[in-house]
Length: 379
Ligand code: SF4
Image (cartoon, rainbow, N blue to C red):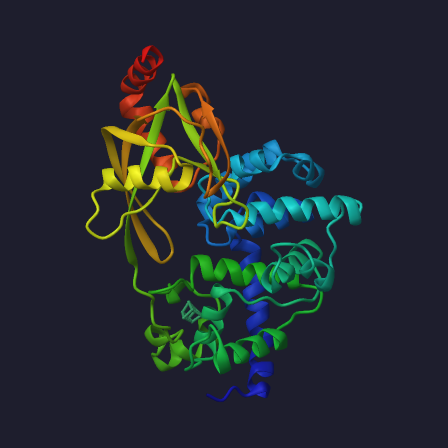
C-alpha cells in the first residue's frame, strides 16, 4: 500500500471544493445544525455513537426539551438522565454525559471548551468526539475519522489494508490531516459525514450520485466492493436467560444494577443466564436465591422476548413468581431494591429485555397483573 502524499495534495483541492459545494445544497437538516450550540453538538455526537440517525434525532429532540442547557443536565439526578436515555443502550454514555456536565458546570463556568486537550479530559469524550466538538461547534481546523470517513477515504485512495487499525488506519489518519481545509472544517467534516450517510454508504454506494466520483480510485479501478478491506466479523453468540416478576402484597420487586456493571443505575427484575440442562423456571428460582436470598416459586409464564446486542442475541424467558416464604432480601448483585406498585413500573429505566417485557405486559397482560397483585394482597 503506497499513499503518495503529493498525489493526495494535488487531488485534494478540487475534491474539497466539490465536497463543500455538494454539502451546501445537499446537507441533511438536523436539529443540532441550526445554531451549532456546543452543548447541542456535544449531546448529538454522544447520542449518535452506535445509534441510527432517525433514532438519534428523536432522542435528541426529547432530550433538549427536558434538558435545554448544560446546567440542566448537571442538576438532574442520574435516574432521570437514565430514564431519558432508556432504549438508546450503551448507558455508560449517559452516565459520562452527566458526570461531564457536572465538571463543565463546576470547572468551566458551564462552557464547553474548544481545545482538544480539555475536551479529552471529560468523561466519555474520546479523540473522535473531541474532534467533532472542536471542529463542528467551534470551527477549529481539526480533522476527524470515524467509520464513515475511513470508508470514504479507503475508497477514494483505494487502500488495500483494513482501516480499523494498523498501517491502513495510519494511512487514513495521515490523509485526513492532509485534507484539512483551513477555516472550513465545521463544514468539511459534516460534508464527509453526510456523504458517508447518504452516498458513500456501506455495501453498495450510490456512485452515480457522488460529487467526488471523479477523484475516486476505487471507482476508477473497479475495486469498490473490496473497499474498505473487511475485518473478520465476530460471530453473534446466542444467550438464553430467564427472569421473574415477583409480586408480593400487591407490589413488585425491582433491583438496581451495581456501580461498575454494564447497566449500572438501571433497574431490573432479578434473573440471569440459564445453566446447562436447566429449565428457565429453575433459573428464576436459582437466580432469586443467588441475587437476593429470597425463595420464590414460579406461578405463571408471561412471554419470551428477544433482543440483539452488538455481539450477542438474548432470548429472555419471563415469568410471574411469588415468595415461598417471607424474608428480607439480601442483595448480592445489585445496589438497592424497591417494592413498587404497578403504576410506578414505568417510572424507572430498564435494560432493553426488561423494557420489552414491560411493553408486552402493558399491551397484553394489564388485567392479569392487576389480578395477580390483588390476589397477593389477600394472601
Ligand atoms: S465514487 Fe462511489 S465509492 Fe467512490 S467516494 Fe463516491 S460513492 Fe464512494
